[in-house]
Image 1 (tube, rainbow, N blue to C red):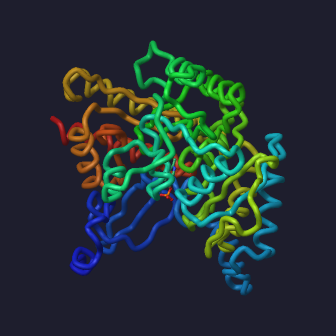
Image 2 (image 1 turned 30 degrees about the horizontal axis):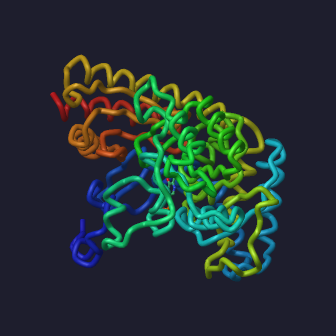
Length: 426
Ligand SMILES: *Cc1c(COP(=O)(O)O)cnc(C)c1O
């Protein structure tokens, strides 16, 4: 395996190749293959970018057909057949059955591009500047998004330039099970001396992905929506990781029955791992002037094509939704079993019992410390499973397997994880 040029030329900023130091060549479904002939089960799936697996055959066919027909690949934000088909599919397959009505902003193709555009829109639409975010939130690392991202590691990488325009309030559960953190937020909003500038918007992940699979309660989310309505604050749901079916619904907020003013999607939106993002906004909020927010790669035609194919394939009925719930329970049961084993052996961090949490197939096994989690995931890699950690200390082992994973691969992956925990810690 030749890795010298990779180690020598790529910046030290690289991350995942440190956890998984091998050279990948091919991938199909939930399986990754390497140059030296090894096969891995993928429970990382591009941090939730490959919800429909690697090289999904139906989506691939749509892409190959489009390329073979000389379909337009780049045209700035000019109209294309691919864009029209994408918008039609989004409206027919996703919006209409859910009784939703949004306009679509196509910013640059990454998640942070969408978040930047969403918070800018909230400012333009309200004439206010302040954005409220939540502890452990992750919304991207460009300056505007970073201001709403909690993790110190990313915040310290600005070279000392302070981020601006946002402040944090505690996420659901941050103060323990018996405190409703929205009491604090609501009190601040109603207090002339609370020190909080009246926000333009609140940005939230309904299940925090990078922040540790922290799950906002459904009633808590409903109350957050109500507080936003009462105070005329825009509710922005960042569904970049939790969306596109990860929690068992196309939009993660559907479980709570809330209707955000602004939504961001990226990661699995193209359905194929192609870079793609959009911002959805209530039509009245579309205060943009033509060309006021631009970019060269606004709407990637190949991604329009794969995204539309993915929506037609997976969201025209509820087969995938039900499958995600079923598989989610399989992961939940096994994570509970591993947590119980860790607790019985007293192996999770002192004073912290291991536990599992999640919604749908977005699940975490909290082992109390990054050290313990790293030992388990490193052993898992040796045994043929790619799985990552998240949370403020990297203490949560995170399952983001493709939603379309076969039951055999799912169970084999969980077997590997359980055996690896035992091998690494006994
Ligand atoms: C990954 C992620 C982002 C940032 O997306 P990038 O494509 O990495 O810029 C923003 N919000 C959430 C919730 C994410 O998971």
